[in-house]
Amino acid sequence: MITGPTELPDLRLRMREQVMTVECGCEVVRRLTANKSAVVPRLTGPPEIRRASAVTGALLMARREARRLGEAQLYWVDRDMTALTLAAADCPSREPVAARRMPAEAGLVVFAEPINDQDGEQVVAVSWSRWIPQHLDLDDGSGLITWRLNTPGGEVPLHPGFEGVWLTCWSPQLVPLAESVLPFGQPLVPLRSVFGKRWEHVVHTAWQLMTQSSSARLAELEGLPRSRPGRKRDQRAGVEDAGTVRLVRVHARQRDAAPGGPEAPRWSSRWPVRPYRRNTCLNSRLHAEGGCEHEERIVPAHVKGPVDKPLKVKTRVHVWDTAPPAEA
Image 1 (cartoon, rainbow, N blue to C red):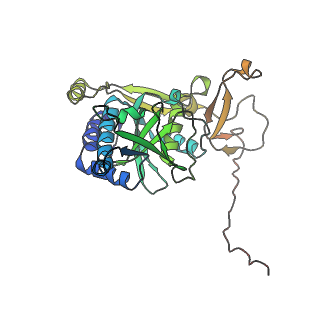
Image 2 (image 1 turned 90 degrees about the horizontal axis):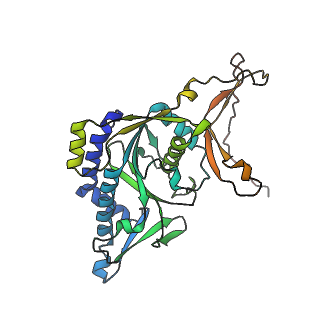
Image 3 (image 1 turned 120 degrees about the vertical axis):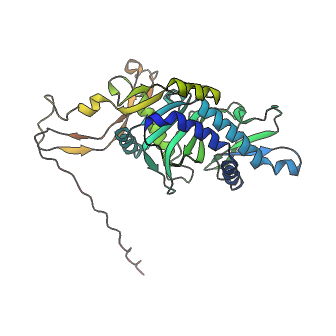
């Protein structure tokens, strides 16, 4: 279990070793064989070659993951920022996945508090990188292996021009649990789908919070440089990233802001407002002509109303009861 941000660079080295172990490879083969992987490999050729699809695919996926971790920028999301991210992620994003939302081309984000997925598993870290199918090709580029994407509608062949982001989630024991491929230009799969994972929505929300800028900034980043001996160990292991850990915290303006103010209406009470997403126009002058650009911005949970008024919280009780019998 990770206890602090300074551990991330050394833990990254252990994760790269872990992903190349036989135990980890067997788990990936099991997921591929059971068709529970985000992508499915297919080898062309005689039956004895095709039967090796899962083993070959698992090896290629492990090699790519080791490279992804070696290139990844490191992020530590503290407890307050994790709480804000989880609360905002409960309101699912409708925004298409876009490269500009990624805070880095490749990254590893670790949350101070685990994410409880709907399958009962806990996720504490997620690695990612921009991805195209050629990244999982054979060394000789012979084209003997093709990849398919698992979707709610079934397997979809990945054409050469496909581009998206690859995500791998990690347990508190730093064991890779599953992977996802998010195509650029498409929204996330709804959580009600068996293919929709809560940790995908949490990570996408964390990206939105980290890249939300200007007066709408909700996060601030502070860099913790890697020590010189640590950088030398990374270089010997083939790690390309400098090892700086980016500490992600709630922006000071949000921590210190007080609800209400001199311009506030004369309300008789205060009330809590849950986090929500607002569709914001970035080029309002071009809005009428339809040439503007929109993006989601997250408004954090807050208490609205004057500080000297009582706080009122509405309580709604849901009663589950037996349905009345049908009339004859």
